Length: 436
Image 1 (cartoon, one colour):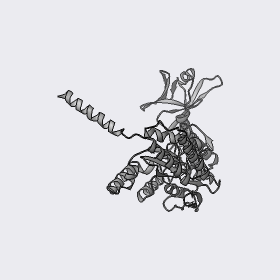
Image 2: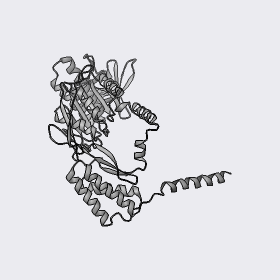
Image 3: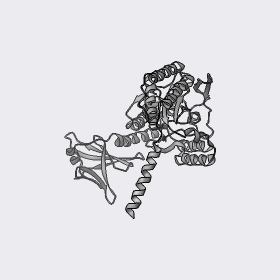
Image 4: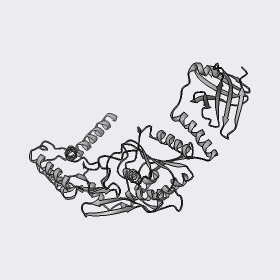
């Protein structure tokens, strides 16, 4: 019985696969797809001169028989994409075999249900506000995974995230894995970082031959970040609207970009029917920055500080602490910043101390005992927990997973360890003589 069931299951599954692949292209349908694609590009691609070149190239390829042996629509879509990008590399331009795409777009049946499902997906992603955190030194960190459509809920999520960071000394916005999204959300977020309405970007639409200006709206009623230092983490996966966010801030000299050059995709896109189930994702407009008079298409946004994607956060965090220390005059604030710089260096730039030196540190210092065990140094005060030690700099160590105190080993002229100084986070200092 089980074998019979398995046989019919395999038969049905095989038939399903066959049915899914019964659409094959012929000479007529191939010509329809190539000619329609060429005409659509010529009529509506954002750059008319490049559109003409792409259109002529496709039609010449068709005439020469380049596509004659292609019967698979997926393969044809891929090859046509490769051919147009060879003429003009555009981060948003592509073709895709997606039968039923436009039918689904136009079908209003169940529209409310689809909208509800989209809202649930947006909510599950917290509208792109993936993570907020206070880093050592009171540095705000926001990981932004995408720019979701502007709505009351997405604006509430933005405000909640920014409110959490409102008492920090500087903000890092992490967009290393952000593929873009809504330009309206870009403008909304930028409004928190400018003290006046600012002309940040324009869009030229080839079809209407019109330019639309984009200005920030100042939004400081709940939180005010207009003077706060701002750093953006970027990578080659930062694309589209996320690149606009970087580019707008960079050219207004409002933020420092850290990481590596972004993807280089600057053109808004619309879907066009290239017939026979082929969808043309066609860039129809381009961004124009009011400062540079151009955009980041094909070149990306270049950071002020180059770093690997993996090291971008630590590079930003350490730079901010250094900058704050350099510009802080208040003694209490300065002490705290230097304290947290040491802790941060332990995390990002761990140091190693030679085994022979570690062994020299071992001994009894009043009520504190330092032991060397299996290549590691341990600190313990009488009747207190035992802590593994980690090196901050030569002679200076701290307890692992305990940021409240640091230990300095004092040596004599003969390089013998004679004393221990204990520095506390509340600015107390104690000295303990070595007794053993």
